[in-house]
Image (tube, rainbow, N blue to C red):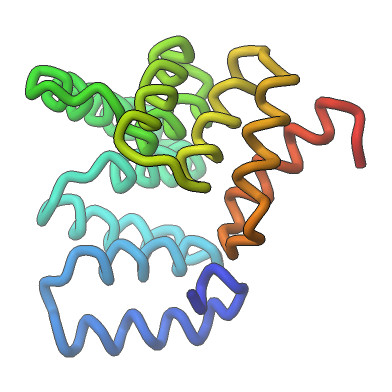
Amino acid sequence: MLFKTGKTEDAIAAYSQSLKAFPKYHRARAALGMAEAAVGNTAEAIRLLTEAQNTVPYPEYAAALADLHRLTGNVTEAERQSKRVDAMIKIARAGGERANRVVATIYASEGRNLSEALELAKAEFEVRNDVYSFDALAWCLYKNGKLAEAQQASEKALQLNTPEPAFWYRGGAIALAAGQS
């Protein structure tokens, strides 16, 4: 919550403290990596996220690493990380998974596999109906050129004023596309 509300240095301290208590806790390591990225410590962010990914290979870790490698000009590694996301969703689909708002949002953000992203986001409502699902749906609708539907879903994502900076970024992009300030 500290990180999401802009208290990045406090978040870094809290994540570091968590890792002292639980040195192998991948979520704290990944979160620390994201916070380090936010303050410009890209090499440290890559190191931490890579360690987290080596513990548990989550798609969000691979997507973050792809973004960071693109930022540093390492296109080969960025592409490798994007392919990891693809492999993870193939494995999940082979196991019967139809919904995945995390991968849907990743695909939409990267501007690829957009029809699959929308399918994954829509299927999410068979599993849960919450602001995170509406945010993923809004972003996927927007990236698929369905602006009016994206606006409606975005309004539902933002209705509770959840402190999720990504909701507000994506909602802002959708609003701007619709001609709103």
